[in-house]
Image 1: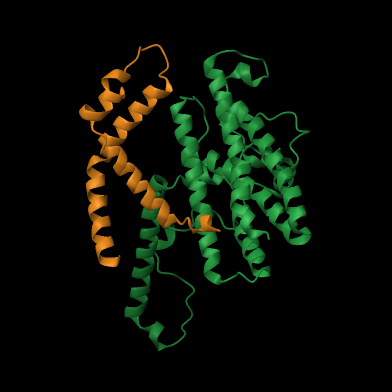
Image 2: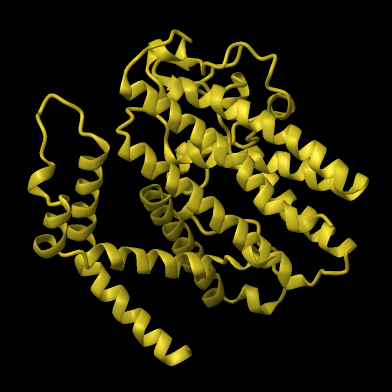
Length: 278
Length: 85
C-alpha cells in the first residue's frame, strides 16, 4: 500500500540533486557546431548564462510559495483515473453513496486518489475548459460563433465563479462557521457543477430542448444532493451532521446556509447554459 | 445572452465601486444613527457574535484596511479612464 503522504508516484529516472550542483563545472556535452561555439568567450558566456538561469530558478522556487501555495495545490491534483471515474459517477448519481466523510491521515486529509470524498481541482479545471469548448461548439452549430466569443465565455464564467466563491466566503464569515474548508476547497466544489453543465449542453445538442431540460434537471438535482451531503459534514456541527435533529438557532442557520449554497449551483447551471441551447 | 457580457473587467469595476461605497459610509453621521456604529457592536466575550456584529466588524475592518490603497487605486483608475475612455 503506497504511503498516503506521497502525493505522486516518483517517476524521476535521474538521481535527485544533480541539477544545481553542476553549476560550478561548465556545461558538458556541447558539440562544436561551428567556430562560434569553439571560441573561449562564447563558452564563458554560456557558462555565465546557465549560472544566471539556475540562480534565477532558485530564487523563484524559494519565493513562489509566498504567492501561490504550490504544495497545497499539488494535493488537489493528486488524482488517478479510478478516482476521476468514480467521482464523475458520484457527481451524476450521488443517491446511493453512504459515507461522505473525508478520511484523515494524522490531521491532514488523505489525497484525492485514496479517498473519493476528498475535493480535487483536476475535475473542475478540466470541466471548465471542456465547458468553454462545448459552448463554442454549441454556438457554432447555430452559426453564432466567432473566435472572440470563446474568450468572452471563458472570462464570463470565470467572473461568475469568482463572484460565487466570494459570496460563499462572505456568508461563511458572517455566520462564524468554524470549518476547515479552505478557499481552494470552495473553488473545487463550485467547479463541480461544470460537469452537469457539459452533460446538459451536449444533450441539448443531440436531443434538442427537451433533452437539454431533462438532463439538466437531473444534473441540477444530483449536484444539489451532492453539495448538501458534502457540505453538511463540513459546516454543521458534529451532532447535527449525524442526522440527529439538533435544535438551536445556530444549527438552523447553518443548515439554511448549506441549502442556500447548494441551491446556488442549479441556478448557475441554468444561467450559464440556457443561452447556448436553442 | 446579455448576461454573457459579464467580463472580468466588469467584475473589477464592480469590486472597486463596492469597496468605495463601503469606504464612504461615515461613522458618526450615518452608521451610528442606523445602529451600526462600531461601539454598539461589541457583545459579551463568551458568546459568538451574531451576524449583525460580524457585518459591522467587517465594515469597520474594510474601511480601516482599504483607506490608503483605495486612494492609490482610485487615482490610477481615474488617470487610466481619462486616457483610454
